Image 1 (cartoon, one colour):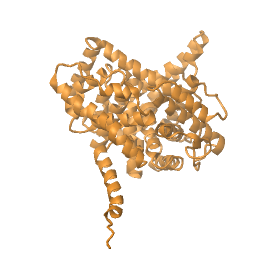
Image 2: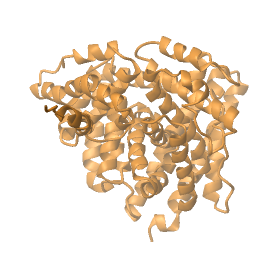
Image 3: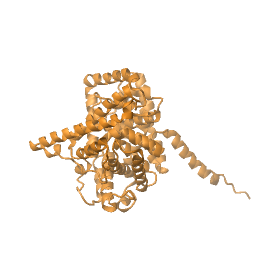
Image 4: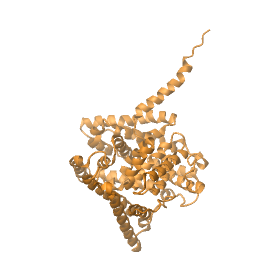
Amino acid sequence: MALEDLNLRDFMTAFISFCLVKTLYAVQQTAKALGAPSEMVAPKNPPAPGPVAKPTAAAAGNWHSSTRRTFEKLGDPAGAAFMAFDEYSSKAVDLVSNVFGKPRGYLPYWSKLPARLGEQLSVTAAAVGRDRALYGQMASNTMEIFTLVRNNPEKMGIPERGEFSLSEFQEKAYGVGDFENIWTVEGLGHVYSQRTWILRHNVSEDATGLMIDGQAECLTEKSLCMMHAGLGLCLAESVIKQITLTSSEKEVERVLRAYIKLCKDNSRPGYAGAALESLGLVTRTFNYPLLDIVQRVLAQTDHEAWQYFWRGAGRGLLFSPGHIAQPLFSPWITAELEAPNEYAFNSLKAGLTWATNLVNMRHPAIMEDVLKRRGAAEEKTGSIRHGVAASTTMAVATTPNHPVVRQYLEYKPKSRDPRVHDLWEKLVREPAYRAVHRYQPILARHKRLEEVFRFQDLDALVDRLEASETESTTPVEAISIRP
């Protein structure tokens, strides 16, 4: 009988996670007693508001709930270690289930194992050899952005409790830097949404207008995409607490419907997708064991939200502590293990490209290395092209006349291989140029910027939008006055 049939997969996953988090918490408390600095052993942010999953008769569900409560008490070092090892242990359980039961991933595990090992060894060899500085820079860039969003209140000086001036901190968010403000604005959206949801609505699932009414009326148009992404982070990290590994599909559906309703009721027209996408990021990065049940039920509940979910999960791949050190476990490889079908697989890679492109835009040699390794394989799928186009659209929407984007467009690959230059033109420079001069202006004009938060053909979308403009003006222009 398969492991899935016996529920041993969830049982073992929950048990290992429980033991791991308790061990790390004990180590942290010991370090605290020995005088470790508070910034190393104290949690940076308060727990997400809202109810947690109800106790059940299933041990795995109760272990899972206890694990999440303990995780909220971990400082950054222990928290990052837990997320990395929790994912690795979950994948180890999945590996065993691929031997005895039905594989979870999009591609059968064992048939692709030799190719995956070869690719991982190639990355590892490059990272400890000729490209050591490049991979070190990539990890440094990712950690910088991860902490910038996660520890946003501390970095910007937002009060720990109570209401604060959104207009004042919006200005501060944009004052951090042209490159950084995408993430400072996202972090501000997270904190403001959480604080307002608590103070004005008592964390009610019937809350409305968080990004529309009150202080949100002061928001500038350029801030809206990432403020809504922050709204999604706030809502996702709260509702996900109500789900455990043993939650019924009916209960998971109820929670997901509440999340979708909250995103739509609190978003401005044309921005709900930016909030919906965050559920994939929160689930994939901070609640990896729940990835399968959430995506499975979401696919049956709301297909459009499911599309946004997988793009967000792809973005979460880069920021997952288990993959920040890519020489240990490449996120490109793990995408194959997690996607249930081809669309999800391409969405994961598009989201991963989104994050890789944006986080490393000051160091374009990193994207050049991605093309050397993945460009030829992804040229036909459109995943890299979409990720570059979508992230660049976001960059110039949030920071008009973005100086880093202008420099990025002028970059010439250092490789002597003409194929790399061809891939750079097709998959990076051209979609980035179109993002600046075509996608962003047209999508903004039609209030459809949320569309860059899911995997699709952006050229086809903007063509349809332009055609609708022509159709709307043709009847008027075609009228001729006859005597």
